Length: 221
Length: 221
DNA sequence: TAGAGTGGTGAGTGGCACTATCCACTATAG
DNA sequence: CTATAGTGGATAGTGCCACTCACCACTCTA
Image (cartoon, rainbow over all chains, first blue to last red; front, side, top):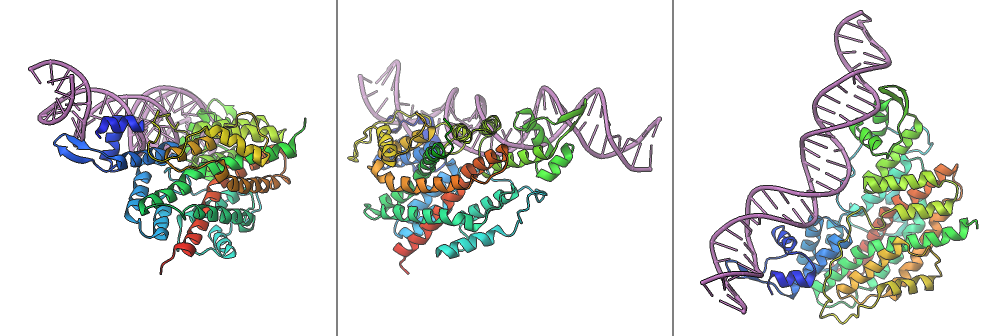
């Protein structure tokens, strides 16, 4: 198919497709002439995947590019693939770097700062989680703890432990769903979808449950 | 204190503080002269909160403004407050709208499209969740289901049910931690922090657990 | 053989979160 | 008292990002 059909079937405008081609997100079609190329169903699938990651999930174009490259490179070894995908993914959301500010210790709130990184180590040890040496996800947990403490909320790894148990069960559910997938590329894509696209939905479920239980507890009329 | 001290103690540059003042994120200080104003500890706390929401969590400035306004307006009724906060929050991440594309039905994959919204209704009914009529969080779940189906992954509300149970327990944990807070404003802020700042950490915990269990299941060395 | 469509490329757009500069003025050190 | 640094307020500019437009030589279709 040519670019206009690709555009029509994907719902992505032609200039945007060209932009993705230029940026290497979408592989070039098979050239049939100087100004003519042929795209196939794989291109369409890839394009839909790109739109899901960028448009629905809000990944940046460059993060999407890295993730897709990881998926393409490591279709054989599922664990290695997952590691690459998880590593290539921005862990919180898109890309704005948190901009290290050298803020002073909060004067009032008695919470000792401590080393949040050690807290995370204690948490993973308690959970029996064995991971790669310095996973970006651990960094996120560390930063969250630091932030909560800087705001005077003495929070430590013990406060996170019950959530960690829930996360553990969620991860088991995730992996259960990878079992019966098809060829390696599809399996890789499925892993990506379940990890990434499900994230906003999981948070949304928590919000719904919060609203329900909040009504139960605080309703006054 | 004056703006330079506010800047030094918060780690936020003076131009940025001025920008927040102008945009109404940070209330103005008490004016002592034509070009002199006095800021207090509340301004400092608020500024740190703003930086956490924008810099750590990645909220947009306008979303942050809405959320803070909701916190300020409804300190009395915790349930109403939570509702406002949840409503004011962008549910997935910052603000880029997903751009409704009129993509064609995926031809191959046998997954019937169905009405994803009905799936979400079935899910909340099954969980016994009672929420406001049209919570944005439900919309997110609906969109996620639609996206997964459009990518050919026949996913329905039953697939989400086990996650919903985990979300339910997470929400109970969240609300447990709101019990012993101080004055209404602080309680409101705490609700905000626990709902919003914890989100990336929860997802990061899931990633850590995924990595661990992935190693357990797929290791080949 | 006209007209629409194609790929490729460079330049432009709009939005966002700052950031720089300027101003009249105030506080403070000497 | 002056000199200097700092202040609040405002306007304009910056850098980045995800597109989007315009143009080109060319090719396919009627």
